[in-house]
Image (cartoon, rainbow, N blue to C red; front, side, top):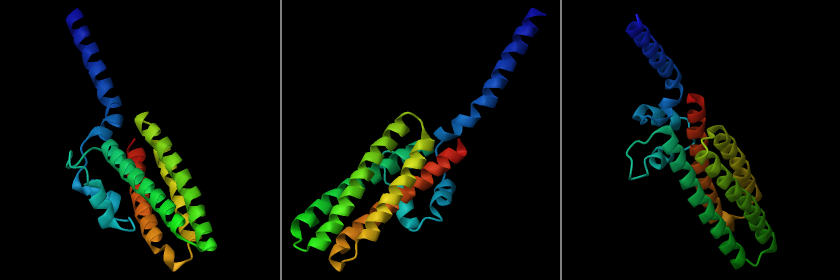
Length: 182
């Protein structure tokens, strides 16, 4: 009787693990093309989204956690490049109104860069809900910068701002999928 009890206990333990673990295991399963399509199909620029998510040469299709990291890194690079562009454009303009608009965007992008760091830390801690919330907050600052620009001379910044918007929309969509699947 003892061996069957031990076997029964072992099977119960294994069943318990199988019931608990699948709720977290799917985050670490390689995503399919269908999942990528689901993430990107309603994106404002779905081809940008797909290209961004496939941009890491070290993994053809990583898991959702990996896609979130790729998205954070792409958004981080784009935001920092835009911050550098703002500084350059501001230093070259003599128009005080345009310089003021650049300064507004510099402040917004300073906030964006700070929030990206928060998102990175949340990702490292496995707090994917916070990553999602931070991505949404970043989009607010991005739109604020876009709204502040009224001069045609700011077109290069408007283009960079649009790229950052696409990066953070991608991050928002991936992190939403990650939290939805959690």
